[in-house]
Image (cartoon, rainbow, N blue to C red; front, side, top):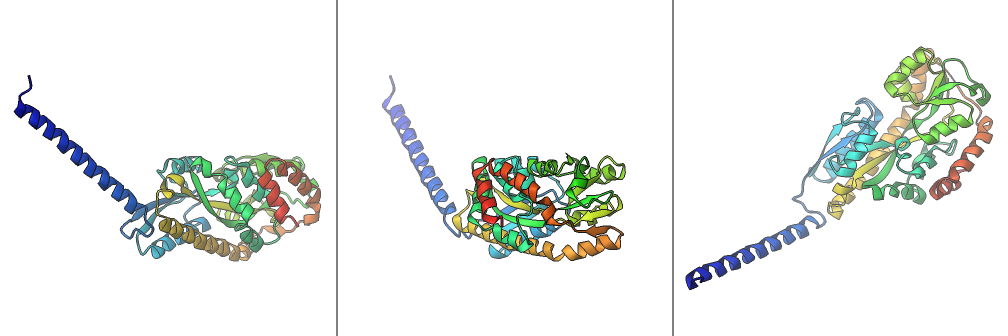
Amino acid sequence: MIKKRELYFFIMTIVAALFLSACGKDSDEANADNSGKDGDAGQTYNFKLAHIAPPDHIWNETAQKFAEELEERSDGRMKMELYPGGQLGGEPDMVQQLETGSLDFGFITTAFLTSRSDAFSAWFAPYLFDSYEAAFEAKDSDVAKKILATLDDQGLRAKNYFFSGNRTMMFREKVETPADMKGLTLRVTPSPALQDWYRLLGANPESISLPDVYQAAQTGVIDGMEMDLDAAVTSNFNEVTGFGALTNHMVWPSVMIASGKKFDAMPEEDQKIIEEAMAAASEYGTMKRASLEEEYMNTLKNRGMELYEMDESLFKPFKEQYDEQYKAKDPLISEFIETFRK
């Protein structure tokens, strides 16, 4: 038999527990409501951003600009640590970290993203843009935004593009026509879209990590490479490839990506700050890189590299083959090419 006194204390214990539980629930709900309000002035962030480019690359300048814009636009609530040079791993590692939320932001090459979504191959359609400015304008088109959105279901929030040069071709021996490339072994970024382009030209594309490219050209393992001018300057590729064809056949876009897990949990006003800061950094980095093109060319010439042009009309049949092949891969690729091919 339970005595009345014992029963009384038992009931009161249960009532107290229920009361505390209800209070805790109300408090949690209040905190959730407050954290979701736009412009939560008390919320601070210490973000991490990673990329694979070295600290002296235009990418890192762009990342620094992004960090400055975030801090200024948020009145100091948003700060960011930068991890350049692959400190947090290669692009597959960084994308995985973005998915899990252990990394807040990443600058990821469009070349790598073609392995995540075929749609990004649209940017590598050869000779699609006749100027750097045209490519920069294209990034804000509806179809370019649709391509970014193809990563949404992977836990990634691809928010903007930025550009770091055009692609050129560099050779150990002078190549003047596409026919001269037949049978040559060329180092090409490991992206199916880029490699398929060189196969159409009759070359043999090889995927070699950037730190190993110099030695591969020096020892004759490769006959040349596809490369942008700033990488040629900083890595001294002029020493092992004495001829540079300024084809400018493809732009070199990269993507600013936020972790979906982190971004989606932020108040809308803070999301807007991030998007605006990214847009400012994109314009800064892209235009800064464009302004350096002539400087890079002069540097390579002064080092003894022969720079020359190849007539775009020589590549017409190969452009048509590429378009036909890749438009069939994804409706967004077809829409992108149809929108911008002149």
